[in-house]
Amino acid sequence: MGIIREFKEFALRGNVMDLAVGVIIGGAFGKIVSSLVNDVLMPPLGKIMGEVNFSDRFVILDPSQIGKVSSVAQARHAGVPIIAYGSFLTTVLDFFIVAICVFVMLKILNTLARGRLHKTTTRECPYCISSIPVKAVRCAHCTADLLPKGNSSALPHAA
Image (cartoon, rainbow, N blue to C red; front, side, top):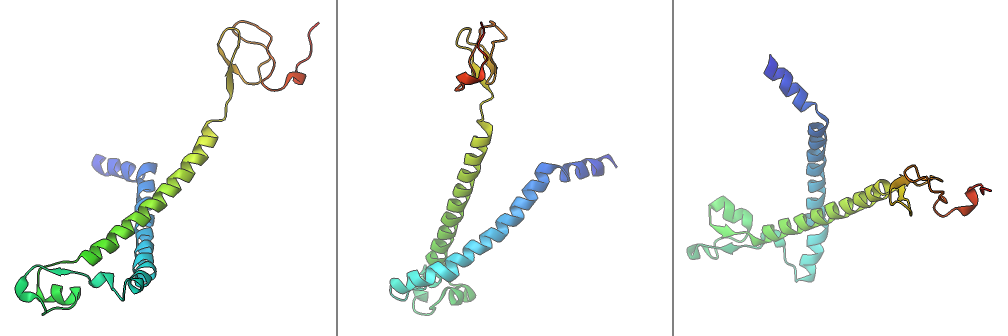
């Protein structure tokens, strides 16, 4: 019974659940990108390049089969060895679009995280070089009187 309990704890941990959600969303996102490439980008690109259908671009590896098949589907059905470079190019384009989207998303998240993480809460005492709170008016280490950073009017003047 201990293995079942351990597996349940493992499977319900936050990281595993986050990973599962990421994989599911990533799969759906991959389908969207594939549709974008196959249904939106490749047809106009093929039209510009002279009515080329990239998904049907291939090279027949068996010279005796040249002229007997005219599409990737026919070649695969007949068992003719081919290099389907059109499908490969489409998949590479899919990959680059996903990679660009992930890069942009991570860039945005890192920028947001950096702004949140780099809020300064301490500063250096100019006299003893100790770390003190930004709002400190006296150093706790050397007891020097300090002006709050950028606000000299906030200090009461000592006589």
